[in-house]
Amino acid sequence: MKRWLVAVLLVALAIAALAVASVWLRGGREAARHSAAERMQCLPAVIDGSPRSGMVWVAGGVLTMGDTFYPEEGPLREVSVDGFWMDRTEVTNAEFAEFVAATNYITVAERAVDTARHPGLPPDMQKPGAVVFVMPNDVNGTGDISQWWQYIPGANWRHPGGPDTSIEARENFPVTAIAYEDALAYARWKGRALPTEAQWEWAAREAKPGAAPDRTQPREANTWQGLFPVINEAEDGFVGIAPVGCFEPNALGLYDMIGNLWEWTADEYESAPAARVIKGGSWLCAPNYCLRYRPGARQPQEEDLATTHLGFRTVLAAPAP
Image (tube, rainbow, N blue to C red):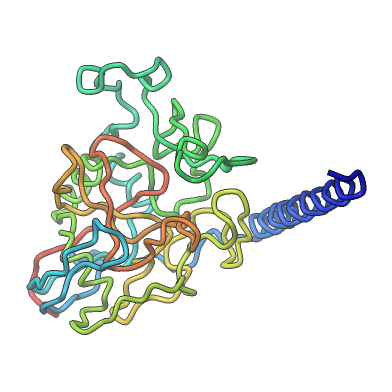
């Protein structure tokens, strides 16, 4: 190869590298700017003492459940759902703290790991903790999620990023690092239940039988803008999790049914032992990865694994208003 051609290629590569670095740095600056200006509360607290405080009514009906974008979403099937009440938001840190104070409950992430159930774990993963998203400096493809997910000992609902983090002043954020058992215990304490997958999807579809699945990135939801997982432009105003209710509710008055956090459902995942169906996607879903900000999207989650992109809300079987 002639020297002049080698020189041209080297210059082109240098320019491309500078362009990538510039985009990366710009994304980092934008994320830092948004993080400093993020809201800590978006909705006033709802306290009226009734069994249905903070809930909305979802009328029953028939829906065509599922989607066809990812294999696990099918087949499409017709499902009937009775009417029910549902929390208008994800359960918050303040609400979960009230439950813990009343019951002295200890979450799964705060307990010793069951090594008999999970043999062969490395030493750090035998300690109480949770899986935390840690934004990487670089990635080699998106097939290895350990490039941005890390098991951090000491991470739990009080310290969602690890032992050096806190939920202080974040009472209005959705509680996270919650395993299935924890969500179920809270729901039962409230005299409620976790939604079935069908209930959850019906509510996310606004109780509309003919609601067509929308696969575009939603504007009124907390999702990832930029190149996941390395460039977070935070165009929606939030670098990470948002307080509950910062985006417009759906037609039923339910907030954050799409984005912000994945949510537990009561249904077992059919092909994964000791796993439950989770719905709704999270702030980590982007057009280039995890396009699951849709009502029909679903994936499995190990029942005893607490993660910081997963929360929950409850439902109540009671008469219509």
